[in-house]
Image (cartoon, rainbow, N blue to C red; front, side, top):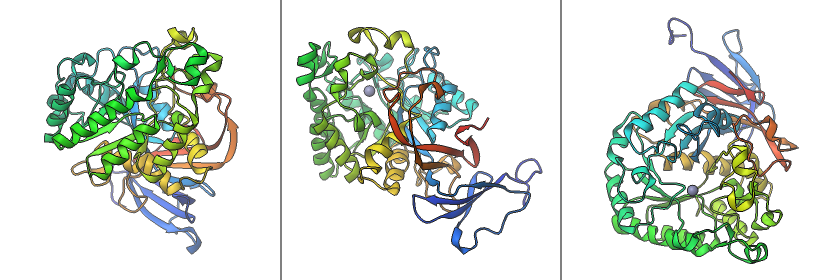
Length: 453
Ligand SMILES: [Zn+2]
């Protein structure tokens, strides 16, 4: 054993009997920050058990590459009453994530190298998962002039994903310039597709439910018009656009068409848009108020099918913590958004695996491999070393893993969540599965379903 850390041997873990991607049982040996070996358990397993290795019995647990979230709101700096980088990344680790992208709509806005480096450093200090700051597209999310995209890309945070999320980059000329700008460093513009004039005062999906409740409707076309425009702009410029929280069947059709042209278009869907529908608003409980709004059962079916066939690339949580006073109020006054990091894998299990639409290999692809690639931290990323994510569970990969027990079925209990906010729309809902352990570069962040530190 070579001395890798001040004369001490590197930490070694032997994860016994786990099922990589839901396949046959295997023993996974971790040495230091890296997966050293993956051996079929049937072959008598690994012959490395000695007192220098910590053995973890993972019988019947599914092993997936550490999950990657392209879309989370960590609220720091500025709204630490709702969430901090430390609490949000703890929630992420408990959900099986090893890397998350932190949206730019903080106070101040993450629109300079200084703010994105602050968020990146807070993530390193917390140590729960890697934090990839998303830079704002426009200064102050104001939609009027481009932010310092190049400075953020060149900063220590190495920003590659830019978004005004919460706001749409509505000005077509600005969107075009942003797409042109990020081409130079292989960046991507993540668009919150919401035509502002068509959604002024909108509260719920426009349709039967909005009419019945007397709330201003949010038409599907307000999303689809921007999705179509930005696919065309990305093609025109030869740059990359990513569609945030796709929520309508029509958006799916446009994205499918754009991909058929070979354009650089990717898309995400949230767990809640895969499971919940707009009729939940009939009780006027603002826990179901979210942007974009919950849609119809037909939209949910189209989103599931699109995630299954790869038209939608990945699941992203849009984790949006809010303090109780912002959500426990009348519908029209309440904030948009719901938490999601601690429930995402269980919801995807329910919506996609239990329905036969995805197997565990598919879940690994849609929740780790593809989001890592879109965030420019995927397996082939050059120069990132062991900072890569979405890598195969194979020797030489960074040891980023989640161990998941698919068997238990239990109601979601928000009081057990470590997010500072409790606005989960899944409270009390019976969901399958439990995250048992999460490893970040060979170090457990979660063990036995609890934070490891
Ligand atoms: Zn958004």
